[in-house]
Image 1 (tube, rainbow, N blue to C red):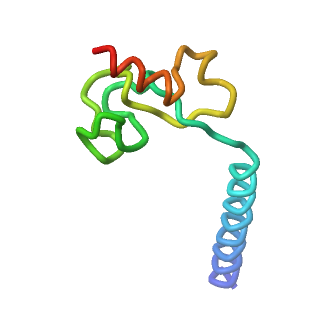
Image 2: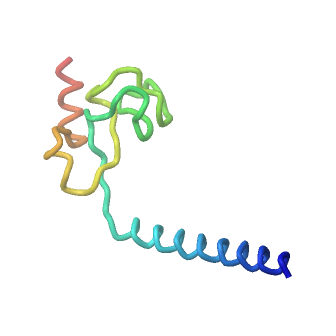
Image 3: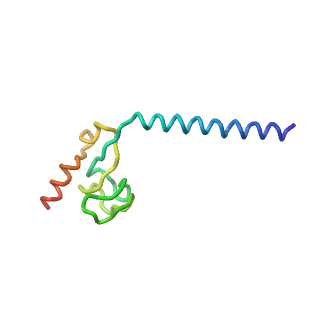
Length: 95
């Protein structure tokens, strides 16, 4: 009897996790994101940088470098002090 209760609880937990994961995925699809340059702290960039010195997430060595980016909710980049890709490229060209 105790084994049956444990098995039922485990199955219910697994099913609940699946429902929660599906809900999270649906929620993420509804939120559009954009690349925001110049806001990534050292080691927290989301992918390759504009200058081509690396091609993976988490490899930036300098905080707030203009060629490094993070995804943010669409429309929030400028509010948090970030730059668009065009603005970041212009900043890099000036150096």
